[in-house]
Image (cartoon, rainbow, N blue to C red; front, side, top):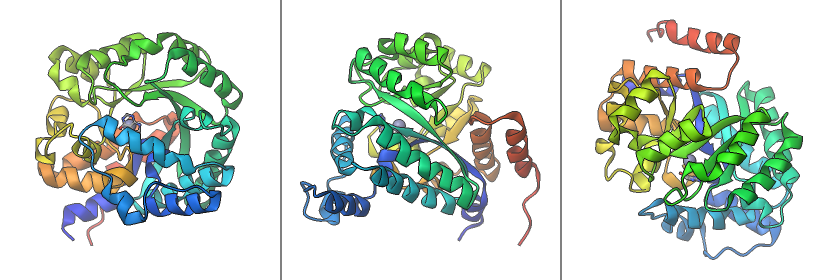
Length: 337
Ligand code: HPA
Ligand code: ZN
């Protein structure tokens, strides 16, 4: 193993952009389908994996919503999150903010409480077993209307102790952040932290709307921000973090090869760039693999890789003491073997 790969493996990491339903590996999908008496439209794990060919976000979303149909019981949601958290532990992830899509479940008749209870139990167990801080962010599906998001927020109010924030995901084109202005205002007033996907497939204007209309504190993806130099200066000046997901961008055709990925230019523009996995079961890699792949494609230096990991802790929802403790590890020179 080259030195830089070992550095990446040992770096403490945050994962700030992971859709927990996107960590559903085909093997677990088939096991849950069997447990729940559901027939999947694929004969085997291999046939399912072969279907993971996407040329744009919507191709992926169609399969992603179909995949989550096997999640029915509290135990299913626990098993899903627990499998991910064990994998995160192997990547030396210390802090996770996991997205989940309640409307993808309530629309199928699964109770909001069932989803939250299963995921939350796994988060608590990760703290006890691994010392990982794992928290939950509920996303609104932007292809649905704002009234549906409002009803989902109503359901979340009883779980303010378990859900730290709200986000915005699903089909970006044609669904600007401003469509959700009122529900985000109400979520902010209720004390939720605010996030939104913007500038993945959608234009830089959507990033402006996410920060100025919705008032988000972090932008998910945001890679198309580079098309607008005024926006780049604003994001850099206000230290608004971007949760970048290199393998996702590759698999969804946001970039045609990783060597063309804008992450280096984003770092050079003084943006607070973090690296994350998005939907690791579908895009071919967990967070460690995202670090390794982008480092190798762009030939990032060790200092740049360490800066990205550090950015994760600066971008995370942590109190000042926790953050100072986490960042102190980066100031200790690595031990020579
Ligand atoms: N983009 C938008 N919505 C999503 C994604 C994504 O990458 N993954 C799951 N929902
Ligand atoms: Zn995402």
